[in-house]
Image 1: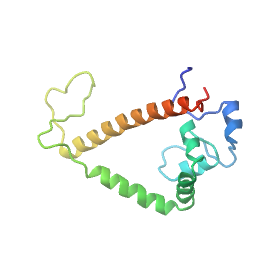
Image 2: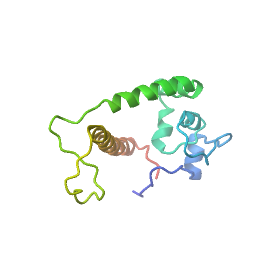
Image 3: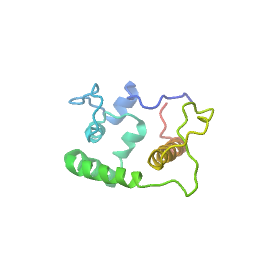
Length: 149
């Protein structure tokens, strides 16, 4: 199986044809904005990953994509609520955490505040979950014969 880079737009002609890609009205150069444009782009089949396109193939998920595309205020409220929940997570009592300057060694005993420790713990957890989900999705699509590489 050929390796495919993550976080790049899949512009291969075969996949573009298979998903009915249309780039009309999609701003591919926008950076630095956190908004609901992901949903607009996904519904226009301008997807970052094939798994993004697969979201449009499920009726319930498609309805959520349309809701967030059409109601930016709803997306902002839901996103803010999710960030608040994540921000309220705290490390276990007695946990000694630090954000390392170099991931291969400790910073020499500099400990971080609970807020920074919580942020670091959430970021690490989300990265692990993302990696697990990516592996599971690749396995699922491969087993179903849906992985086009």
